[in-house]
Image (cartoon, rainbow over all chains, first blue to last red; front, side, top):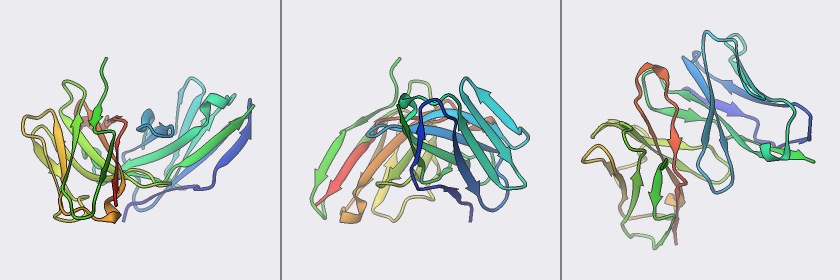
Length: 114
Length: 116
């Protein structure tokens, strides 16, 4: 079955440092992976999508990588700020890239301390 | 602009009762999704619509769960004979379409369902 695994332990880092979150998937490589941010009591908010043929994608202080050999995506936040504290979710399509069915990981909670 | 809205924000019901949860997607979005999220877990897919039809309902846990989208806009998730295990946050999302693998989904705030 197609699964997404994220580190369920919270990640605590100091303001200004780079946060790195890991997303591992099983089975065949998906056509793309997505990353979302979720704050308590709110719905997830889309951040980035990276395709299977893209090794890296950047958006402002965010960087995502996609390693099909390791079956892994890494999500980096550089120069982290307390406002970056949230839960970050990784998701993959179930099956083909044209499906609307997303499989989410359990999320990793990031806490950035001032 | 208006995002995805869900009503009610909270629903408390008794075991065995029937509940309806409503989702208003972003105007013009043809795809609509329902997920269920338990504490400490990621969203769990239930069903998605492309227009008025259910394109994939493989995540509905059993026949007590049903969803409709009669006019291709608003959707209602219906749960019959609720059980305590149905307690969760029910999230709705919408997207312009599903085609092309650009499946950025816009989520609502969710409805927190508590079954006593």
